[in-house]
Amino acid sequence: MYKEEAPPPTHHMSCHTRLPIGISLEDGTLLIRATGTNGLYPYCFGVFAALQDHIDLTRVRFETSSGSGFAAMILLANLPMRQILNLWLRRYAAVVKQHGHVSLIKDMHLYKLIFYHLMDTLRCSDVEMPCTKHRVVVVHSTTRKMRILSDFDDGESWCGAVTASASLFPCPSSLCDIEWAHGWDTGPYIDGDWACRYRRRQCPGIMSFPIEQRGRAPMNAHIRRKWIKLAYTWLGLLVPQSALYDEGYKDALKHVVPQCVAHIGASRPESQCKSDDICDKVSQLKIFFHELTRRFEDIPPPPSQRLLEYNRTSSRVAFKLLVLLWTAALLHNIMHKTLTRRIAPKMKTVST
Image (cartoon, rainbow, N blue to C red):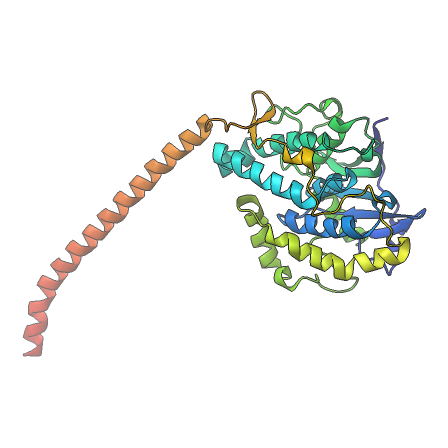
């Protein structure tokens, strides 16, 4: 059954203080509560990849909002983290080339790509109903109330909830007409990270990225300062940041994995894949997303009409700017020569 839950009680957040922030032990399983990634999604993939390589994921559950939900889905579906991240970066680059960065966000092409990318990769999983171990935080776009969606009936509902949890605009909607029946009936929803920001002020017990230690600053010195995190937020929407994957993996090995192993042990089932494995089914997935057919194909679609119009507009603006700069330079040159002719004789008279 598709279920909407109330927020968990705050006293759970303070238990098991030796575990990293955002991780608690409940009934012998680890519950990981994670917030959005703010453009650091490769770093989040690296953190969860370390968990994939070193702990038993059958004893792990997740409650996520925004970008952290993608990595949690791949982890629960038992698919190799690095291969899925590389696949996403290639698909993302192809859609950017088709629509451009502005239309990608404004016209919600990004969120349609996210939904169908998750649906496509989920078909490669051999795990039965992994969505039962994942709770997704969303915010209703009209009432602005937080909801926690869980116990999904199928992969479509799971992918829809994770996509809406990361959306800056109402989802589903006319711009983002994804195949998510529950979202059309009860939504639309927007980014669940808005709720997590409020929850962190009330009870700071949610994992953020870069990961933090209790009472201390973020552990990763490369992305510690707020202005650097802000830069990564925008860079994460514009360029691939695959190097952050290794940063997250190293941080998790040092500050997350040892504490988790101490509580649930280090045994891993043989069927659990490793982060650097190659899945044959994933290798056969296609790159180019066609919105009309809602499928991935081998042949790239033509550039969108909006991108062509944007390029033409940009060309006109660039041409006008060049003409303006050329005119300004010409006027400056004329004025300089005129003033030189008028002032030079006077300067000679004064000097004599």
